[in-house]
Length: 182
Image 1 (cartoon, helix red, strand yellow):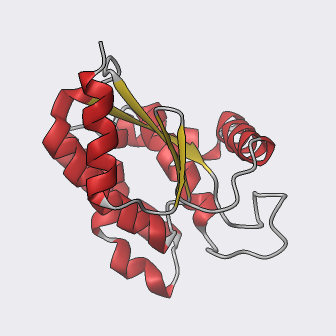
Image 2 (tube, rainbow, N blue to C red; image 1 turned 180 degrees about the horizontal axis):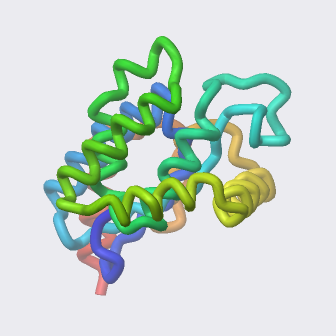
């Protein structure tokens, strides 16, 4: 999300059902509004769900593998931003469990918001079931393990590793410092 040509890159290892990740999402909205085209946030899937994360003994957030696949599919179909914001705007409903119905609802709202057709829905559904979705999840999970990600969100910005949700003022200071560098 954000400007791919931005000077400041924020790398976020996230579980799209994690409560702390939802709090980080609220901070992301502030960052994106304040810094507009000066920041890009790049997501790595790290679902805390044993159904796709072989490093988890138990699932902390059951269904987060499906949520990660849906984010992958939305990206592949060309409407990640819409899907991402709609997903988190409905976050409170996931407390009782994340289901395929949530994905369908978010898909339909995203398509409507983006003004896309049934062809985009078909591309989304194909990507959801694709082996490339499984491969990307596995790649992100293995990378997260390699660099010892132990919690979500874990964020990297300007060489700094931040575990959890940092204070808004801290993130503001880091971004401002990076933007002021020549």
